[in-house]
Each structure stands twice: as structure tokens, then as C-alpha cells.
Amino acid sequence: MQIRPYQGTDEAEVLAVWHAAMTHDRISPNIFRTQVLLDPNFTPENLPVAVEDGRVVGFVLALTRQVPLFLQGLEPEKAWITAFGVHPDYQRRGIGRALFEHVLGRLRAEGRKTVDISPYVPNYFVPGVDVAAYPGTITFLEQAVGFRTLYRAISMGADLSGFQIPPEILELERRREAEDGITIRPVTAADLPELMPFIVRHFGWDWYRHAQAYLLELFGGSPHQICFLVARERGRIVGYCQQRGERFGPFGVDPECRNKGVGRLLLFRCLETMSARNVYFAYFLWTGEDAARLYALAGFKRRREFAVLRLDL
Image (cartoon, rainbow, N blue to C red):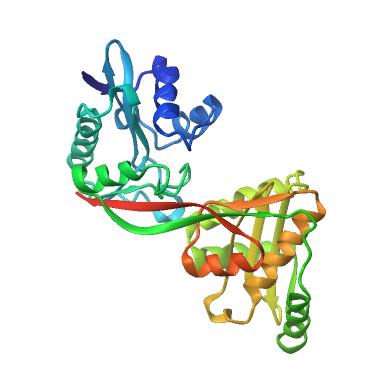
């Protein structure tokens, strides 16, 4: 068995292993090319492949920042692993352990201090390891490699057929506007000078990047699949919400303005807009237990649960 860097002719065999090992997270060749090979942080050395019997039988995809993420910088002590697998026909031969030892050795030599599975931006595929789909994988990572589970991420989805805003939410909306001057409306160009610094200040550069991508599409002439709402309280922005196609979020509220129902109002108004545009399903990949209770009020149900893991190098 040989471990070597990824080569351009490996694509089909890597994807074959990916699909056989990561059965619940298969991707198309186009996604592999755009979110792996064209990721500015991709290097062939950080996608080592295991070759046996003349073909690729395993891989690990690791990322380190080669270009800064806005003012978040290069994060020189961090690394991420977003995908890995060994073909089922070659499992239990030490190939997975050898691949991890290889890539972790590279990361240590570069001075990296932590490696996470897998909250990497901009191009993660799922938040971590699906606890139901790959229970043996979590055991392997924790016991054989030394990772620890940081937390669980919940993926949810909602059927929007015939969606209606409940009367109690409409009453909350009326009361908040009358008592606090809170309004929810679609974003306009006039919001942008205040909105973008608001997102960075309260939610960070990754949320800024995500919002910017949606807004570039919205104001660039493709508005029909995007809903982007802004909440204001007595004139100042206190929250926002975004959606594209069936994918909902993220959305957030100024910490100083929470517990007023602003999040509920943003959520229900956005789902109403989606339903009115004949979007019949809404989903997102990542939330915690507290937010999951809010989503459940709007009909979201748990779809998957992921373990987010970390190894201290």
C-alpha cells in the first residue's frame, strides 16, 4: 500500500471511494471540482490517497488556509478535515489509520495546533460525522486517532406545503411593532451600509461571506430564489434572515435584542415567502439544541445529527 498526494487522474477513483464509504454524503463530480479542486486552500499534498492493487482505496481531505478569510486571516494554528474514507473492501487493514497518521504528521510539521472535523469555511460538506450513519467512524476517530467530540450539530427540515403563519405569531408581530417599533421587511440597497458591518460585528466573517454571496445574487438580477429580510427596532438593524432555494438561513438577532420574539418573526416571515414562491421544503444543516426548539415551532423536524470533533496536535 502506497500513500501519495492526489493526482489529476485520481478523480474518478477518489469519488468511487467517497461514495462507497460516505454513503450518506455523496457528491457529484461538479461539486468535487468546484468545492475541492478549486477551493483556494486546496493543495494536492493535503489530499493524500492510499493506493493498493493499482487503484485508489482510501483518502483524507485536509485544508489549511493558503489565503486569508477576510480579516479573520490565515488562522495559522488551525486545520480542518472535511471528508475521508476507505473503500469497504479494504477496511480493517490499517489503511485509515495510516492515512490519518500521514496527514496529521504533515499538519504537525507545519506548526498546526488543532484539526477539526469539519467546520471549515467556505467549503464544508456536512458539519461533522453523522452519528447514526457512521457510528463506527466516531469510535475509530476517538479511540484510534485521539479526536474528541466538541458538540453535536443538528440538521432539520420542514414541509412548507400550505404553510400559514399562526395567529399567535401575527399577534406577536403586531404587538412588537406597536410597542417597540420592530418591523420585518425585505432588504433594500439602503440597508447595506448598516447591514454588512452589523453582520460582521455580531456574527463574524463567515456569516458576512455567506450573506454577501446571497446579496450579490439578489442585487445582481437573480432575486426569485432568494429571500433576505431585515429586522429593525426604532430604525436600527437588530436582525436579519436569509434563504436561497430550499436552504434556509443563517439568521441572527442582536444579542441585546433577543427574547423579544424577533427571531420568530424573521423565521415565520421568511418561510411564508418561500411557500408563496412555491418552495415546498426548507432545510438547514447546522444548529444547536436551543435553536432547534425555535425551529420546531415552525414545523421543522430533525433529519440528521453530527458530531463535531477536534484533535489537539
